[in-house]
Image 1 (cartoon, rainbow, N blue to C red):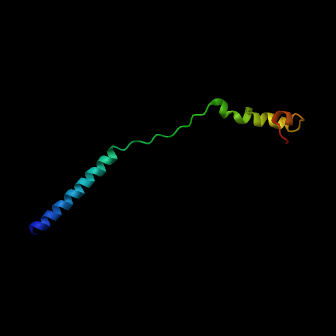
Image 2: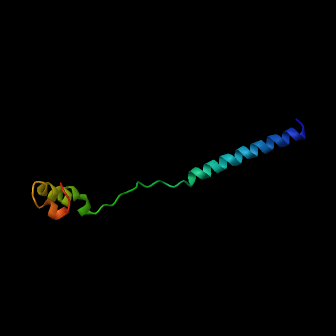
Image 3: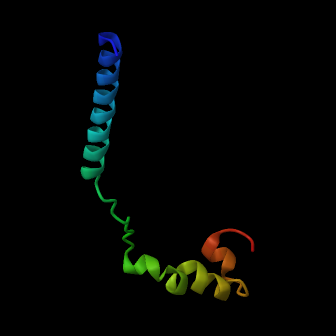
Length: 74
């Protein structure tokens, strides 16, 4: 081997070695992903049971007070 080939081989091996070190460091410093949480207030969770739409409107739909409450026809 002459000096040019040796220099190319040394340069290639140093690049490969540095890439391996970077890959190792990047995996060492990766952050753990947190599970996203969703906070919902209790009264919003119970909206289906106690909300106006689900409790009052079915009762008003058969009543003449529907127009008085919503100002629109059924």
